[in-house]
Image 1 (spheres, rainbow, N blue to C red):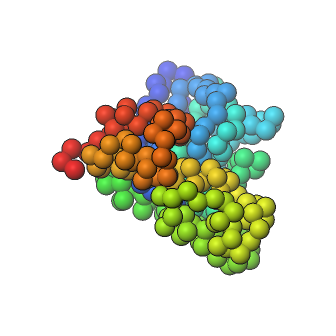
Image 2 (image 1 turned 120 degrees about the vertical axis):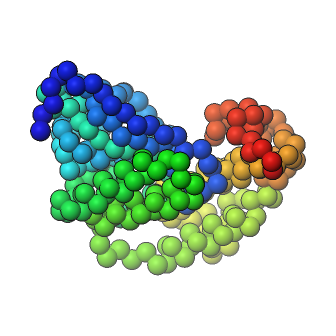
Length: 286
């Protein structure tokens, strides 16, 4: 149903501030009833961003193409992809969105059959789309719930995205690849505090570095080097929030004997220095 141009934008917007979750993390989420011709971009995101259209219509500009997105459909923006999206002038969008990332995020999007090259989501049925919408709005409307509760519903969102997608990928043989990745992730979790190399991780999996790098990137969505960096910085962020350890001690805990090198790496990942991050996020009473 079309809305008049006099309708004003209505918005719910929340930021998720917890970096402890590696397999899946949320960054921000919300709901908006946009004004006519409302536009966002061109812009590139650092994480996956998925919109589900509740009502109205509009267009997504990506891959030098224009995609028409109407109610009951959705669209994905992948990290680093420059996109613009715009509501229709006479029937503007109402949508809900989640920005997220992590190992299970990349894997689930692959299973759902949506990507930067194929960004449009179509539900198998109206009921399937409604269930996805309900799960996303649950997260939006329960922003005060505990981080663990919200992440749990993030997993339910991913599951429903996969189960409901008309482009769902069936019958893939994943067992051997998943075994290699699990071995690599367990090794990183147990050894990130020391100076481990990618060759060492590949050797644990019984693979040469080149093939290991390809398998890892296909499954996780980033190189082993990038994943190890982000994992260490996530652990460092946790220590900055929850302990009174000095920045030098935290640097050493995540295999950075040089505090200056650690601070540069941390700022590249989180956008602020370790000291600034602690001032904003420190949990009193720890």
